[in-house]
Length: 228
Image (cartoon, rainbow, N blue to C red; front, side):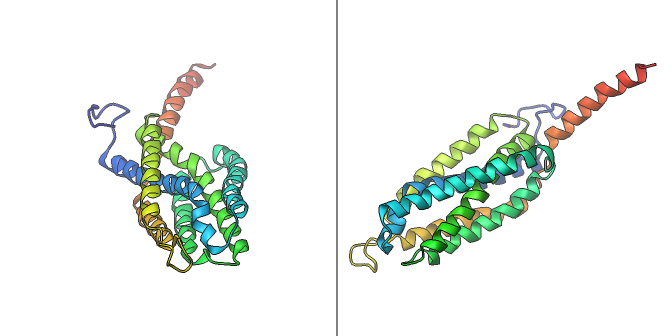
């Protein structure tokens, strides 16, 4: 990953693969960071619009619960059916997430609990479906399981940054409604959209899988030729 491998090494990454890993790191870091910071600031985001603490907490719980259900349903599909379609999955789900996070700018208003719960459920389903896909694709591109540590570091760094920035963007007590997080939601939506647009630069060639299949084929072929 540091470029010190010999070109003949299986761990050697081409410039294209390094670019892919950079794209994955940026998108993964922003999406994980935004989800983490949002779950921490849910009450501050929706409380000024008249939503009680319990309702705001349920919205955050809806995001996580919908995501867990979606992940449980889609994991077998990616394991058995969609194993070669990781990159295209990212290119489909990332723009959807960008639109959803951006829509919160206008959805966060009074008497819109149904719309907010719906957005939370779809964000959770898309995000937790995408999470293992991105981790797997990073390993495919780098052939190094240590890539996951870099992705999680990026996610944690963005989450800390988002909490600090969004807290600073909170409106004052004289705003309408008081202490609202409208500017924070704008920042959040703009950040996600800026990140997910880079996903279209992703090639996402699953090099590790191809190497494994070639190695398996090279082992099976001599055995077949030696059979009577």
